[in-house]
Length: 155
Image 1 (spheres, rainbow, N blue to C red):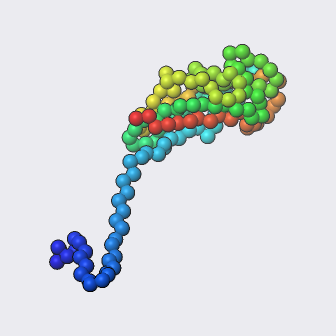
Image 2 (cartoon, rainbow, N blue to C red):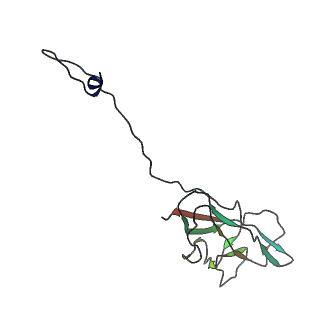
Image 3 (tube, one colour):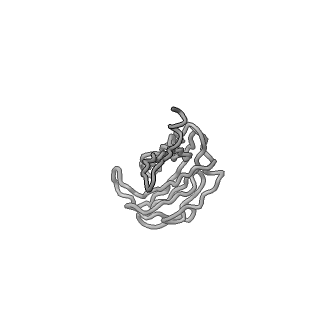
C-alpha cells in the first residue's frame, strides 16, 4: 500500500490523466524591524530657558538581532529648521541629537558612535537639545519640526 502512495503509474492503451498535488513549503528567513520610537520629542521654552525630555529612547523590541539608526531627517514644521552651530533667523528651530546637529531642513550627518547598534531588547537613549529663535510666541503643542528616523537590521 505504501508503494502505491509514493508514485502514480498509469496503464492505458492511448491516453490517461493523473492528478498530482502541488506541495508548498514556506520557510521565511527574514526579520521585520520591530522598534519603539518616541511619539514626539517635546521642547519647552519657559522664560527663555529651553527644556527637553531626558527619557527619550529608541527600543529594539526584537528577541534576537540588532538594529541601527541609519539616517535622521529633520524637516520644517511651523518653524524653519536652522543650523545648530550657526543659529539665527526668525521662526527657527535647530536640534542636536546624540551630538549630531541640524544644518538646515533635510538629512542630518550622523555617525556610528552617536547612533550605535541597538541589541535585541536593548535601547538607545536620545539625548537632544534645541535652539529656538527669540521671536517664539506663546503656543502649546505646536509641531515645530518633523523628524524621520530610518532604522535598519544590522546583523
